[in-house]
Image (cartoon, rainbow, N blue to C red; front, top):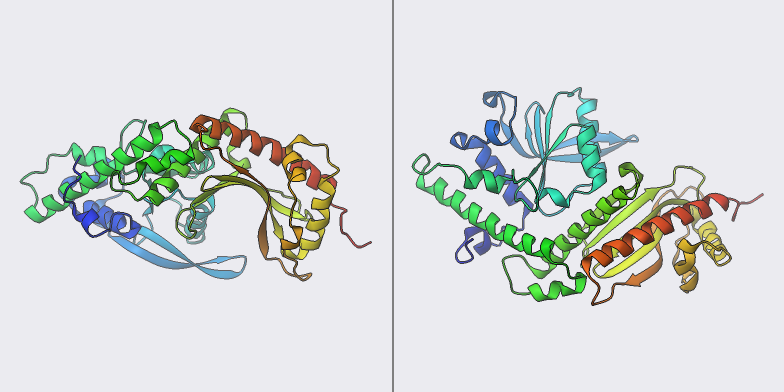
Length: 376
């Protein structure tokens, strides 16, 4: 592992996803490295594949035209790669690619999801990849059969086969990935809770905020795995994460309520930084009815709603829309501060208990109280 001079650190480019997309394209196009056949194990003829970077296309969703961007894709869409060096994708992101391919009658495409390390992928995304033919590849390997890009590059004998400039760039990239792997390995193996992340300040090449986000992604994957072990089906919950747009990194679990007449569109559990939250997603046109429903929670005897009853809610913050306003908003019903001395496994266990209890009871309560606020 090298922590001295590294071009990716020097240019502050290591945390930029486009840089890694460019590196993947460079490594693919350097034929003597054999990525096409030996790493990706592609059955396509490499001579017929020219990878395009950052290609934008149009797709219609419910009659509305939207832009979709392919990180790396062949001109005929026979080979595509979704690069997620910084985060974990959601099922919806992958569904959009599949919808575009189906609309354009591309049913034989080789599809790759490229993540930092495989164990960060949540159960719903894993299940979707298995069901719809996405192959998961990783940059580094953590507690898994190490078939990562780093492992592949480290095992290659390319000295003297490439120009000195290309050899230098590959060596620098290997050193960078080794450092990232060491940083992530330390986080994953640490049994301390979210507060202990502060002890990593100044260590390694990742910023504290990056480490906070990657640790949350690790926590999310552990929660997801535990929920599956307790019988929760992969597609019952959808996972999301946000490490870029918000100042405080966050992860979330969502459960949709399928009845179109439901006041609540979906339930959510999230961790923002070091705080757990439970809440609801609702259509603004139902804002007034949601206020009335939350008032009714006070008379419920369901254990999963105990924390909602005990918290004084500022329900005036619930947005109210016009009758035809189908825009949605999220409202937090209760928060839980994670204790400073709480261990990682305890955080995961508490999260699983809250999700199972709150989601089950709120789903039943919502279903039983659809009459609230209706005009007769």
